[in-house]
Each structure stands twice: as structure tokens, then as C-alpha cells.
Image 1 (cartoon, rainbow, N blue to C red):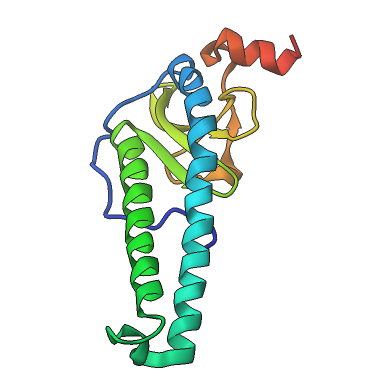
Image 2: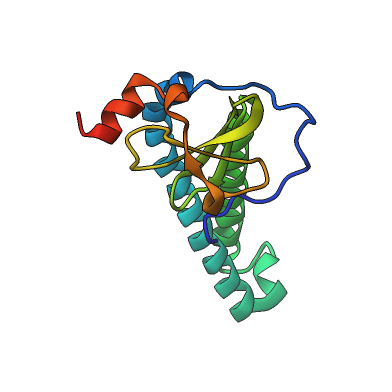
Length: 164
């Protein structure tokens, strides 16, 4: 599990919502709390996957037999896998429904649908940054991100950039 959000069916032709920089910045504290939780679930999913793999490699299909010594462990791991997967998918889908795209859980990379100079773009933020200060085209990705135009930046982002 590398922390990359699994691909899903293409989103709607029109984003569910367009965020202003100020609105996106207002969500950062909540996202700053949620992203480590998502990362923890991804890490645990990796551990569960590895343990199920070890059991299956060692015992083969026998581990699924109800009278097998490790059957209960396998059942608990399978249930934990399903629960973690459901929670992760629901959390990411909830954000996506709001127009927030979790691009990379490991680094906390998040995009908000927004407008810059009349163009629908992603307002780009990564956990640890003080505010949303960058954007990129919908197909441009993190490497193509550019600083927000000064007139589009919030007072919070300007103050964070200037060190105030």
C-alpha cells in the first residue's frame, strides 16, 4: 500500500463545488486532522494484507477451513480489511462529493476545485503548508502547480508567505 488513493470511476463532468481560497483555507485544520487518520488506515491495511498473505502462503486454502487453527485469525483479518477499506473509501468519497480530491494520502496532497482567471483549476495544498497558495490545471498535476495570482490569494495566504 503506497498511500495513493485508488482510482475510481470518473467524476462528474462538472465539479460538485468550486472553492474559494478562503473557503479551502478554512478546511485545512480539519483536513490536517483527517489525513493522518487516513494514512494510519492505509498503513494498517498494508499490515493486514501482509499478514493475510503470510497465512495464505504458509497454509494455502487450508486456512479457510472452519476447523483450521488459524481460521479465526484469518476471519478477523478479513473483517478488519473490509472495515478499514469501507471507512477509507467512505471518507475519500465524502471529500470528493464536496469537490475535494485527495491525491496522495502519504504526503497529504489535496486539491480543491476552484477558479483562477475564469478557469476551473485545482487549488493545491499539501499537509504542512500554512495555506492554499498554489493551483494547477485539472490535468497538470502537482509538478505543474503555480503560485496563486496575488489578487486571488486570501489575507491568510499572503500573511503566511510574508512570514507575518
